[in-house]
Amino acid sequence: MTAELPHLPYRLVATDLDGTLLGPDHTVSERSRRALAAATEAGAAHIVVTGRPVARTRHVLESLGYQGLAVCMQGAQVYHAGEQRLLTSVTLDRQTARLALEKIEATTGRLAVAAALDGMDGDIVLGPGYRLFESELPVGQVEVLDELWTTPISKLYIQHPRLSDDELAEAATAAAGGLVGVVMSGAGIVELLPLGLSKARGLSLAARRLGLTAADTIAFGDMPNDLPMIDWAGYGVAMGNAHESLKSAADEVTASNAEDGIAVVLERLFPAV
Image (cartoon, rainbow, N blue to C red; front, top):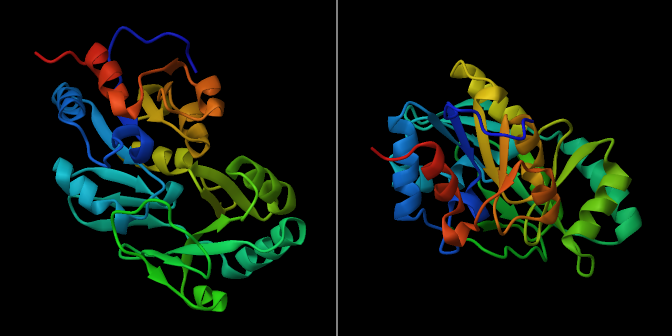
């Protein structure tokens, strides 16, 4: 990544949602809307890149009048909002997922587990004991963990009663990193993904469809799951509220999501006429 901004604005603006584009109230501020509008009016494309499944992203996209591509489910899904259809969808092999869980639990003890179901309407289903810390939308639940394996899944969420998120992610990587990808994407959210999947992979596929490259891209994020995207982009920006690992890797640290950190940067690059 370059350490200095180029003279001309970037042609692609990639933004995470939670903790990044969305404020603490889970909405996009008017200032951020104006800054994104100025960027798109100048000719840049905006791509949302989120860990959320499409089913939990569409209402945000609709509120923005968003018609372009969105990368969802940590890169597993590329969704065309204007056409309301999935362009790509990657699933997590259920046998591999069960083996990974067994290996992790052999070192950590019992985990609480939830799953994100495959498909455009696939939502999140909670297994016994799993707590969803923040959600403005309802979720499904199963009484027995085996019920999670009855339909294709895109990823798993795991929780531990005592380990911190960082400790759990580290233990899961050590135990099963050869089987699945492990990311931390928010408070209380440690995820198991198909091996090799990342936001960078999904974003690169979406960018290619637009004829754009990493060098054309400025990316914004706040959590360790954003690291591949920040590294891939020509210029990576961490929010002021970001995890320290992301701040260390980014080219710039902006203000927090509560302080319109994305707008702070975009207003510099794409001043409104």
